[in-house]
Amino acid sequence: MTKPIIGIAGSEMIDSAGMFPGYRRSYVNEDYVDSVVKNGGIPFIIPFTEDNEVIKSQMAHVQGLILSGGHDVDPHLYGEELMPKIGPIWPQRDHFDMLLLKIAEEANKPVLGVCRGAQIINVAHGGSLYQDLSYRPEQTVKHEQGHTPDLPTHKVTIKKNSLLAKTLGKTECMVNSFHHQLIKDVAPDLLEVADASDGVPEGLENKQGTVLAIQWHPEMLHNNPDTEYMNNLFKFVVKKAK
Image 1 (cartoon, rainbow, N blue to C red):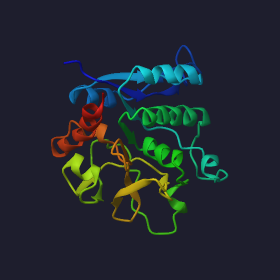
Image 2 (cartoon, rainbow, N blue to C red):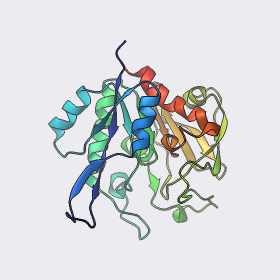
Image 3 (tube, rainbow, N blue to C red):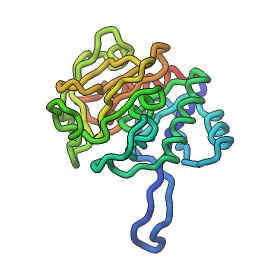
Image 4 (cartoon, rainbow, N blue to C red):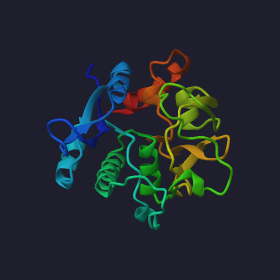
């Protein structure tokens, strides 16, 4: 049986030193690749490009999509000017990711959005973000835990009978957290199915059962024996892929 090809939306890094300062490199963190392999898929990194026709052709070769983490989402996409505490933005990547998402959804291909990927899904569907957790008026727990990628640090509660709960096999779990932007208004056609203890949305899904969006990083937890169930998120994409 042929394994499905799972596209992982790529980012770019810019060399700051060495032989080629300023040189741009396409990449994704290796944990994404390993997570797809471990759970029965064939990972393909989808390199960033501004060519819409190339993006469409890229998506024609994959059966599922993972939107990876990275830059802050441009606030202009949800009608706001940039606030002082926003991090680096990259509007061209926003367009790239949103077009990948649009094509995947139109073709009914499964999508997993991770951290920034979850925020992109929300904004693409008409939702908004807090540009920094300090702008949220309510008391907020620590969502940016630092240099401990495989250490879960805060609790998430998941709605019973949601796709996310059925996928993970849990209605409560501890997660790792590396985001300073937060989901503010959930898009009207998405379901809020998981929240942190402070009420911040941590998991969204669509009504069709093809899109999962989560604020934590399951790819960094897939080898942790205590969080083995995080592999189910990648199994979701692989099993739904056609």
